[in-house]
Length: 162
Image 1 (spheres, rainbow, N blue to C red):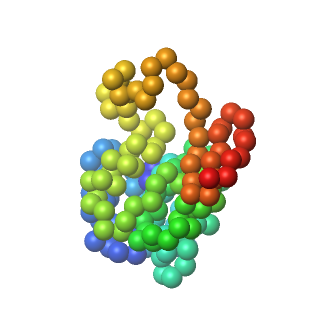
Image 2: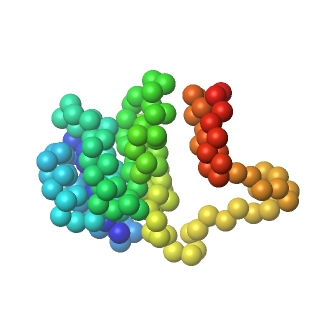
């Protein structure tokens, strides 16, 4: 597994790298968008962790490029935004798994990073939903995407305004 970390804060980038490297994950660190672009074009990135803005420019296009090069890629964006438009990022960037505050501890980012990578964990660490944790008994639920603006159910594609 290869992780690309794009962050212009050296301390946070180094702490996150130290936490992830303990798990045998190859890590490429950079604080420059051009270097990140070159890394994405020259290798396959499984997980892209980036600040939403580096050097005053959005990193959304780099996340989309990483997903184009590897359709199974995942992304975690570090941002302090709290405006209502943040929900739209999940619609615009399909590879986006979560948004985290820039002051999140590296251990939390590591846990979410490992959970976001397809096949990154072994069988001992997989998430199992016990019967006591299930929402309903003997019911099947449709997976759905929920937003403040609308609800879309996956199998039928119907759109219901909330």
